Structure formats: structure tokens, C-alpha cells
Amino acid sequence: MITIALSKGRIFDDILPLLKSAGIEVLDDPDKSRKLILDTNQPDVRVLLVRATDVPTYVQYGGADMGVVGKDTLLESGTQGLYQPLDLQIAKCRISVAVRESFDYAAAMKQGSRMTVATKYVAIARDFFASKGVHVDLIKLYGSMELAPLTGLADAIVDLVSTGNTLKANHLVEVERIMDISSHLVVNQTALKLKQAPIRKIMDAFALAVKQKD
Ligand code: PRT
Ligand code: MG
Image 1: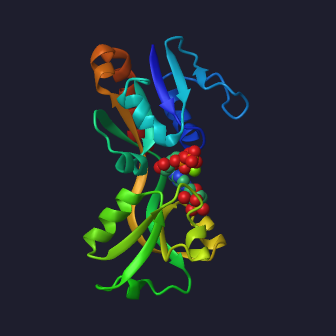
Image 2: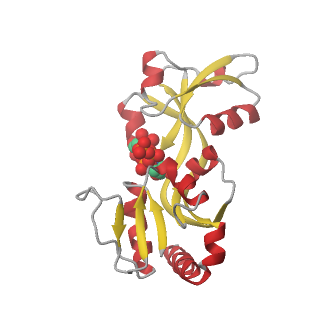
């Protein structure tokens, strides 16, 4: 049995064509069913639905053999014991700094000044501002980061952006792009040894499909 950990939403939607290229079709629709373990047309392949941030944990401890997870989540959670063979080029976005339209970001980035930054991505934000030599006070949030500058909780946020519509709707502007993000395949190292043939088959099909797309 090969168990693949996925999160609902954009990663699930974007991985379906890649699974199909590996001959795998998920039989349940996660939006309609309450099942957390989904069958596929392959009797020896199943899909686990877990929170995006839990995918590395499931794969690291062998609860799943492989999984798909955003680079943002990998960077933030650490990747010990995870084999990361492939950038799948799906669920693409960027991680950026955003502030209120009226906020003077350039002044706040001058040496000696202090800025408060709210984010779910504390590690990524800390590394980024440290590399710029700017002192920031970080506030950890778990969602709706856009509210922080609007309520005075923080001067800036570090968050994922794809179309930019969410920032715009909340009168925020993207002032700096920290890095581009896409989702990666992660594989449990022991599973790769014990179930090498079926895992390699899926990895190779994914790699080919990614290559053919660009
Ligand atoms: O939602 P939940 O708390 O369960 O977990 P999650 O947010 O980690 O999962 P999910 O499914 O929302 O995101 C999974 C992965 O998708 C992330 O880890 C990213 O790698 C990737 N991804 C790609 C995105 C986006 N694009 C994205 N736009 N994740 C989140 N967003 C957010 C963005 O922050 C904004 O609030 O979607 C909103 C809309 O974005 P705009 O710019 O198009 O308006
Ligand atoms: Mg989300």
C-alpha cells in the first residue's frame, strides 16, 4: 500500500492531473464526502486528507509514504528526515511583505528603526529581516494576517500572495517579494527503501508531467 498525504483545496486540485499522469484517480470528492482516507482506482494507493501544515509530520513519521506540501510550510516547519525529490510547480504563489497604503516602508527599513511584523511565517520573516539588518518585533498569527496592519496590531505582514486581490481588498500593498513558492513532493526515507518500485513509478510519472508542462 502506498499512502499519499494531501491537503484539501488548491494543492488537492492541482495535484489531480499529476496523479492522473501516474495512472491514479481519486474516487471520492473531498468537497462532498467527509472521508479522510480516500480510495483511488489503484487498489494499493490511497490518499490521506490532512492539514497543509501536518503533511510534513505525517510523511516524516511514516503515517504517509509521500506527500505534497508548499515550500512555505517546508521552510517554516523544518524538513528533517524528509526526502524532497521534486518541485511539482503547482499551487504557485510568492511570500511577500505588505503594509498599509499610507505606511512609509522605506523609512521603517532604515537602520536603527523598529518595525512590528505579524505573520504565520515567523522563521521565514526572521531570516529575511535579519538578512537586511533590520530589527523587527514578530507577532505570530495563524490566519487573516491582513487584519494586523488595519487594526494597528502590526506595521507590516509577511504572507502568501497569488493574485494580490486579498491585499487590494484590504487596502494593503505588496512592498517586497521575499521568495517564490510552489509545492514539492516529499517522501519518507524508509518507505523509499522498502517500497522503492511503486514510489519510483509515481515520482517518475510526476517528474515527466512537470517537465512536459514547461
Ligand atoms: O487553510 P489552512 O489553514 O487549512 O492551511 P493552509 O493555508 O496552509 O492551506 P491552503 O490549502 O490554504 O494552502 C496550501 C498551500 O497552497 C500553501 O502552503 C501555499 O504553498 C499554497 N498557496 C498558493 C497559497 C496561495 N497560493 C494563496 N494565495 N496559500 C494561501 N494563499 C492565500 C493568500 O495568503 C491569500 O490570503 O490565499 C489568499 C488569496 O490570495 P490572493 O493573492 O490570490 O488574493
Ligand atoms: Mg489557507
